[in-house]
Every structure is written in structure tokens, then in C-alpha cells.
Length: 264
Image 1 (cartoon, helix red, strand yellow):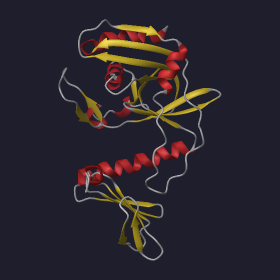
Image 2 (cartoon, one colour):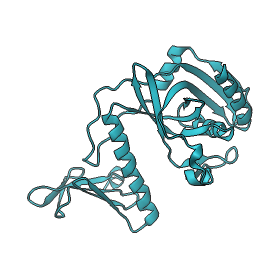
Image 3 (tube, one colour):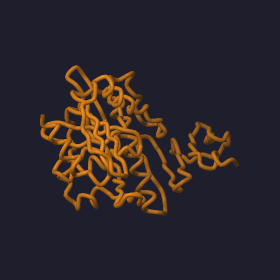
Image 4 (cartoon, rainbow, N blue to C red):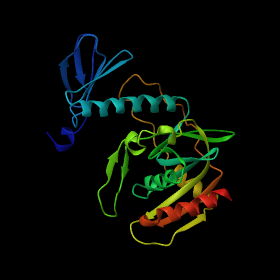
């Protein structure tokens, strides 16, 4: 077996004669009565059993099973949004006043660090990695899905994952859950060394490109019970675009500069 095959999720579908063809490997198995689909996660050992509209996650390891149960929930939430014409954007976001600020950039650009710095000043977190964006003639509104937060406690140190409850010390009022209008997009560029702190306006065309570059394709419908995505939903937009550049140790000063710029 090749390395790729060993790590490929296996999906089994039942058939009327009780045989289950595994379309990944071309092998057939005897089916389980009443089971429509079985998905195996080879990384965690979880078995995800789908029967009608019911989904069961089975794993003797409680923590691994809980992670895969969360993946199922995220899959269902995301595809419900996509069916309603919402797109998923690879961006972090926080709420200020009556609007949202999205922080965009490639992996390692400092999206999470920038949002956490904003939260430290009193802003509410919307998301640390992905947002759902719905766009119509009145603009774009976003809400978030917040994964475990990965924080760097010192330059060069490995990231440490924290749950929301742990990070917010059980005070989830610091999390914004209702959809908010997207007012500003910030292109983050956070370095590990000492660099000049700058916050500058981005030309709208370049800013819009930086935002739409982070729109993710629809999720693969591996559960088999999700609705189809809406055809070509509108792409997100924003009122204003900024670029924020700072060094890791200067997060507080960078956030002061950013919030002052947002007030103007």
C-alpha cells in the first residue's frame, strides 16, 4: 500500500443487496443493515456512521472522537451556509462598535495574533481562522467559526492550542456570534523581528483582491446528507481596506495605531 493510500479516508456506501463498495480502493465489504454510509478517519480511528439524517461518531478515544464529532458539526454548518449562498473566507475577524474587521493574509501572516491583540484592547472576537460571508446589494455581513486558538507565547516557540473557554477564562461574552456588517479588511504582515509599525490605506482594488483571494472553494460533501451549494454566490466586499505591518513584540502599539485609524 502506498503512503498516500494509507492516509486516505475510506468511504463506504451501502447497496440494496447488502454489499458495500469502497470507491476509494475498489474493494467490496458486507454492509451493515440500516447504515447508509460509513466514513473512517485513518488518523484518529473514528468511525462516522450515517443512517438517514442521523450521524454517529464512534471512537474508544474520547478526545479523538470529540474532535471528529466537531468536524461533523462544522461540515454540516458550513454546507448549510453554502446552500444559502454564503461563502467561507480564510480570515480572522473581530468586532468594533457596530461592525466587523476582517484580518486577511496567507498562513503565518499574523491573522490570529492581530485579532488576539484587538481582543486584549476590548474588541470581541468573531473568528480566528475562517468567517462566513453573505453578500447582497447592501454589502457583506460576516459571522465566524472559531477553531481552537493557536498562540505563540514567545518568538520562535511552537504554537500552543487553547480552547475558547480556556482562552477567555469562561467569559464567552467576549465572542461576537451575531452576523455583523463587514466594514474594514486589514491585510496583516506580522514579523518576528523588530520592524516599523505601519498602518496604511490600501487602494480598494488591491484590497478587494486580497480579500477575495481568501475565498475558499465549497467543502466536499463527504457525509452525503448535506444540501448542494448555491450556484456562484456573490463574492464578499468591504467599505475600507488597510495594511498593518508590525513586529511580534509591538502588537499593542500596532493595535493602538489600527484602532485610531478605524476611528477616522
